[in-house]
Amino acid sequence: MAAKQRKVVVSVVGARPQFVKLAPLAPVLGAAFRHRIIHSGQHYDYELSQAFFGQLDIPAPDINLKVGSGSHGRQTGQILERCEKALVSLKPDMVLVYGDTNTTVAGALAAAKLRIPVGHVEAGLRSFRTTMPEEINRKMTDHISALLFYPTRVARDNLIREGITRGLVPSGDLMYEMLEACRPSLADHTAVLQHFGLKKGKYILITMHRAENADDPDRLRAFLDIAESIAEPMLFLAHPRTIGNLRRQKLLKRISAIPNLILGRPQPYFETLALVSQARVVMTDSGGIQKEACFLGRPCLILRTETEWVETVRSGANTLVDLSHTKIRRALRQPQKRRPQIKATVAGRPPSHLITAAIERYLRRR
Ligand code: UD1
Image 1 (spheres, helix red, strand yellow):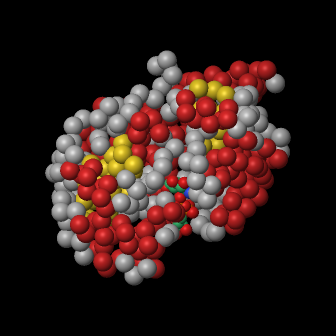
Image 2: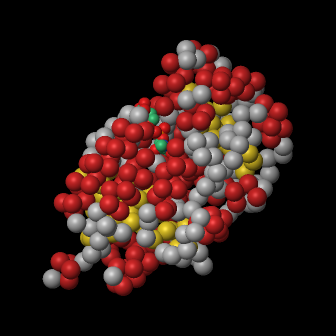
Image 3: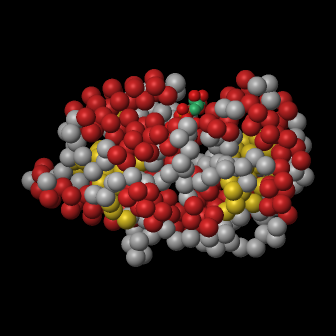
């Protein structure tokens, strides 16, 4: 009887980092609401999608919109159209979207147009680079959300500066919660180092998939110049977007010829964290890996000119190096002492509980 009256909350996810955020939240939402999951199908490769659902025990999606890849307009438009239909059938009291992908903005727009309140997990992050697809997605999403779960003070200040003052909820960071839950068992996953023939503390872990890096032939070449100049072992876990562009630019042979660089496929969550935790240095343009390196106390060079996670740089944990030879060389020479580890919770409370409690309060008032 009570179960019948439970409110319906729908999570719309579709890309790798969203699965990591959903993992600790899904069981807590599931205990409080009828929680349903819509997968947009933006990521469909096993390594980018199913591997995360399996490893992190995320309930299987109730609906898969199967949009696949495409231009931004096509992908976003198809998610919008198909998500609307799915939401009409699920009749949620609230829709949750995560982060800054095309799935995020399309899911938020579909819900807002149906007058279903939207909760945005990871609200308020800004790069102030207006051409970045993620910046467009997060700004649009924030401005149509009823609840804005912001992870940092900087994020809150960004929202207030844009005139968003209602529905702000300090939530901490779900990725931190997930990492803390897994930290004790990371040692069980270090077989991945042997798999790649790497030694603890003796390799650089690299990922690079952002459109501004991977889609720009000049920046891809600049990255290759840098990789060729580094003498120590490197593991480059390449996103299919990056591999596709390397192939199109006829650079795949060149990167494969770097003797001390292993070109690997994206790894599941535990293996990625194990590789981050044992790396001498991490080089990445991923938002998630930037934070995870920082949480794990590993030095991280950010292959961008700016970051939304400014606290990680201000604390001295991470360094913005762009694709600058000089900056990267200098940073790699620095002594690799342990870095400050940021804690991303509010008053020590798990983000999943803070988010769920705020949704409960909001829905009770309606
Ligand atoms: C998306 C997000 C990015 C996030 C990243 C996490 C947007 C605008 N970007 O980038 O913010 O950091 O996810 O990984 O939403 N592809 C495959 N298999 C897949 C998915 C993609 O091969 O399962 C290839 C396709 O060639 C596709 C390209 O990767 O065209 C880009 O995929 P897309 O989902 O558009 O963006 P991501 O680069 O994954």
